[in-house]
Image (cartoon, rainbow over all chains, first blue to last red; front, top):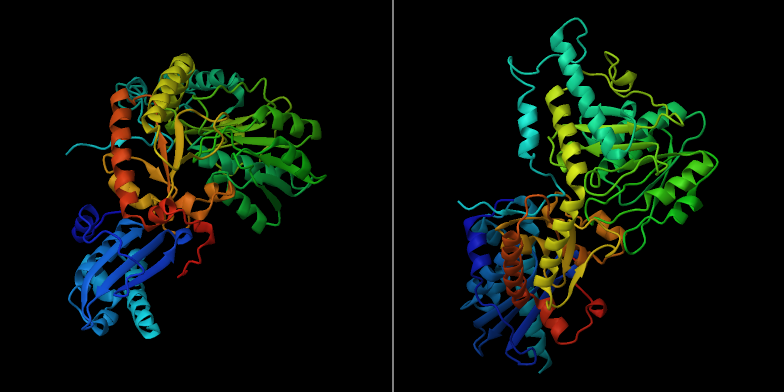
Length: 128
Length: 404
């Protein structure tokens, strides 16, 4: 299968790889997918008191397109408000990375991951 | 552009230059281009002679009689001819067939077709090493079983089934036994006189011969009858019509002769390369050889790199031409049915890569591959949340995953 230049770029030089402290109250973690399906994404965001995403990190087990999708999302959400981040659509990701139809699920997973991270952060806040 | 190093000999092999040379001699006006079926002139006689020489070469490789060799277009056709041919000819005797879940699609899909025609097929599970136990065959035999079809060497994991033992069981019961030997011929010794095999499929392009060429061995004593699938001029004693492709046949014959002459030294050379490969990977955590370690063809190494997904690994191994059991490389998004049949978890199947080496693999190829594999796996594990969890001591089988 031929990969787009964008996918190869993110795959070769993934942005924001890493792990944040789960227990930090400013951190929201979204983990989606399953090993059995061939992809698992863990996306984490660090949110300022003003509700702006200051930092984002990811680790992904999956194909090149899954890695690229999550890498791209961490770049995009930095500086976004939580609401903006939740608005992020998989179609935008798929378009930016020129994903073929068979790889659309990778962008869906990235959208799910960011939504899960925001939800996790909000839940943590609500509990406080 | 630097070409990737070829590590996919189980998919196909390049034609040996010695084979190509012989083939070229059978194409042009000044060569041996005649129709082997032409009885009225020298061109035909010469072509027929070349075809019969090749038939003897293939028969010699198997320790068979040349009259038991039927030329086909490849192992897929041979499998179809053997299975459908037997089923259709012997259907009055019974309509039950036994095969295994790890057969090549050419066997599985042929059996599916026969099921649609009213035959009943039992698909046996391999053991955890990928071997079809002869006892499992014995247990599955019924009064109406007419055919057992089991492969010799598996294409994905390289394990070797005990064909001789299965043959004893089927012959004692008077059931015909077909073997797909596409992956073993020329690499693993096959002595048809000692093995009670009735039908055996071969492919030229897995043994340094041309693509589009194969053989079906059909036993004469005790005689096996087949219903032809291809009708026409009555070539190949009526079992497979169609003008014989002299250049292809000569290529397969030469490939068989070379394989027979060089099998032992090649086996030694490939064993050394294989050891070099494994030694190179020593010390890497969480890597597993899929399939039996002892009972396998040495040129095949199907390896799972736990916590790394196969397709992304392929992307990183861009200087190596290998194939993957990962779902993502196939159109179906299903991981390899062979690895699943071994009882491998989906994630282990997703993380598998098949490295297959052969006649033209060098020590330098192996060293480059080892270096590339080490770099790629450690890079991807750095990226893998599963590797993190494994390192943190999390039991991944207990995690509740969000399936999508």
